[in-house]
Image 1 (cartoon, rainbow, N blue to C red):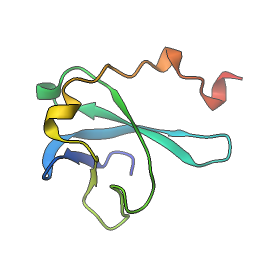
Image 2: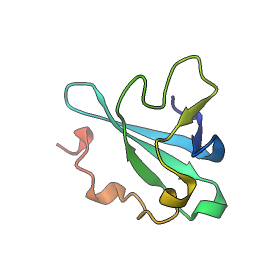
Image 3: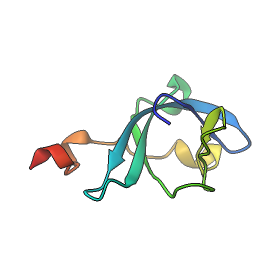
Image 4: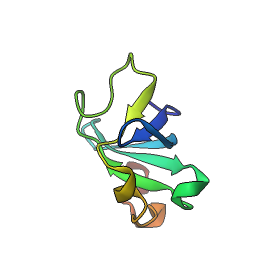
Length: 88
């Protein structure tokens, strides 16, 4: 999934999966996407819901469950505010 191309809406190109955030139990919590310039500076974080909700190992891109109009209004993901596993 890391470095997969991310799409929104009806398969519109959006950017690349730049990072993956894990829970203490080893489950994927969220993905971080570095968007194309037309969607702002980014990066942007999105919850990960698992198989059937945007990612399948055989697919050529990661499909975000958002419309093209929804992703343009998001706040940038702030790594400094994220309580990561390596921050302990």
